[in-house]
Image 1 (cartoon, rainbow, N blue to C red):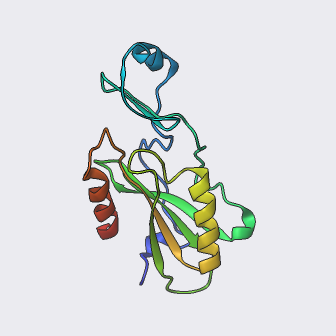
Image 2 (spheres, rainbow, N blue to C red):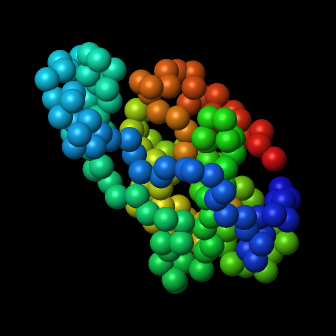
Length: 165
């Protein structure tokens, strides 16, 4: 698999949009507005869906920036927009190696399509280490979450990530 020159270790692009990497959760003001609203769906500690449509997702795992990499992993990481319209992006991990062609591993984070982010520290650290150990490029896709974006939106985002150039 050849990888576009725009993603080489010395020439990787940076984000150019108003991308929000923090999982969705209400502010104090919004929380107070929806505090009296009845909850129609809940996964304890992960997500609450209020009758009025308000969604609460506690920040249970910290989000980290792409440059938050342990130095001994010897990997470069960058966030790149896949689709400006849907705000789909991916975090790429590229080993600092001399190989001309590297294999590509595409990763979709867990969370049942309702929670999670490619920026979560647990995924970030694991994928940086994996990229370093395997000597491969990893594309970690940050797809839209339900219930705001019902199925098949996350599947569509996955397909768009796979055919993105």
